Length: 154
Image (cartoon, rainbow, N blue to C red; front, side, top):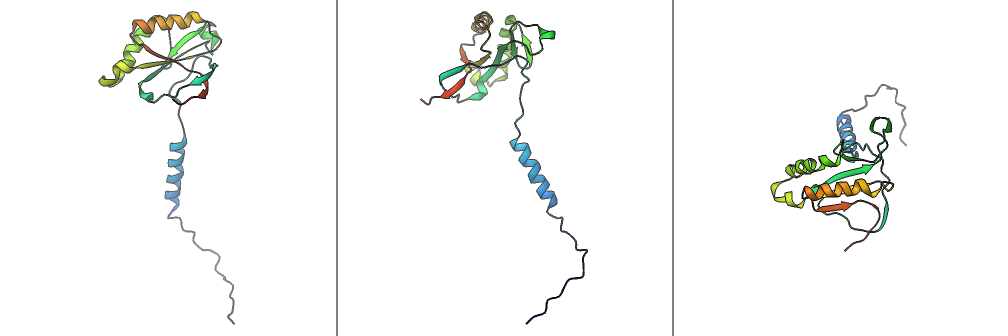
């Protein structure tokens, strides 16, 4: 039979050579899993529901327009406003905005720009038709209307 000895040395060194690797992995994990919002939404959004939707394939060609009542009614009023790229626009500014968005795309894809309209369900049709008219003048013929619902595969 062997004898068991009790260790008397209590100040053992803890190996810390792998500590920077662990910290780096945690940092990398949080960087990958965190989703940052590209734009700050300045208008209220209650998207209407739909029964049949299609999922978009090439999202790089899509520019978003938000239409709704401003969140800060003291500053912007209570009438529905149009927002694109962190700025509130008038319908007259939409042609210029579409041209800037089109110029930001690669030259081969400029004709395929798609405007996605995210419209609050309480907004009347007047501001929406004003935006549609300006999009026609800007030659942005591909317009999507965003909604929530079940996606149907074709």
